[in-house]
Length: 201
Image (tube, rainbow, N blue to C red; front, top):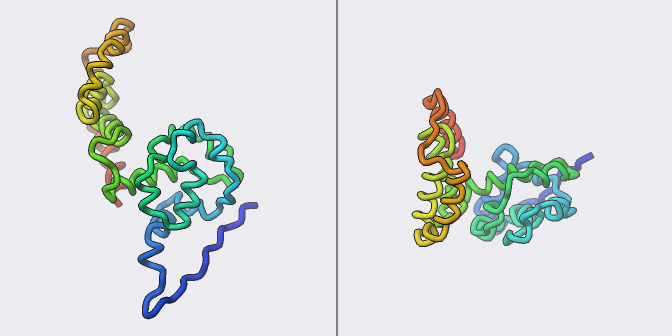
């Protein structure tokens, strides 16, 4: 059975406790639905051993959890760890404490964006932005427009290097020149708007 991670009691220094200012980040993560589950983490490392992208991360999922519990806000939100998450849920499936680690990565992405830790020309954030823009506009992703906008925002010269690859995709019918619009796009926009409102909370 999972045992709850016990936190240390807050120490009082002068008229204030160490609490609110120093523990704000940790408490904020814990207050978001799904974030409180990291209290159960035993630091076994199963998530880190299961993650196919752990080698590319500044900190493995296990370390990220430990750093959140240690209230290392800047180090966590400046890291690339959550942006390398593939959302494959392998860590979540294998976690003996049944912690939804993938959901935690989404929480950290939201906080990084909200707190201004994400670079305007950051690759992962701009790719996510492009996907949302496409879904809002067409109801699905139009790969050609999404990738052109992505490279213009992050690495304009890289667009030239990707042209041969794009041509191959086009010749194989995998890169349509016109977008495919779904029906009921207004309903899809409402869903996107609701998701954005939830993130802004």
